[in-house]
Length: 144
Image 1 (cartoon, rainbow, N blue to C red):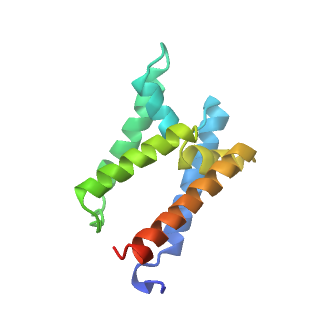
Image 2 (image 1 turned 120 degrees about the vertical axis):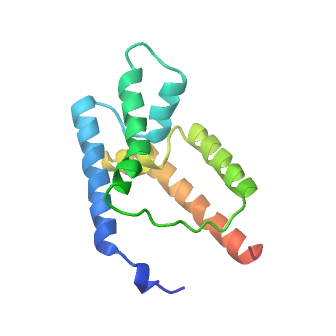
């Protein structure tokens, strides 16, 4: 395995990580809520009175941010080496996993670990290990 030095962007990656961390910290400090995407979206699908506006604004911000970015720069064209069937299956498996794990990477990996939650540490280790195993099986054993 080699690093693609032409696309290695440690400063941009660090800046992105800092922005995510600051946003998650501000969200919990100012609102008392965890910025876990699956929980935010799940709350929109089962709305409670007085709980919809902030959730809708949060999701709108996630969808709208790339649109605002387009005003100033060109989005990079992603290369996805999978068909629609594999992408749909992967999305469903991730969705099922977030329900069983009571949260997603943003909830457990960013917010939970920063709060030193043992449950979030276990969840993050589990989904990272599952990702490593999946990549190994698909890339090396199945030869895809």
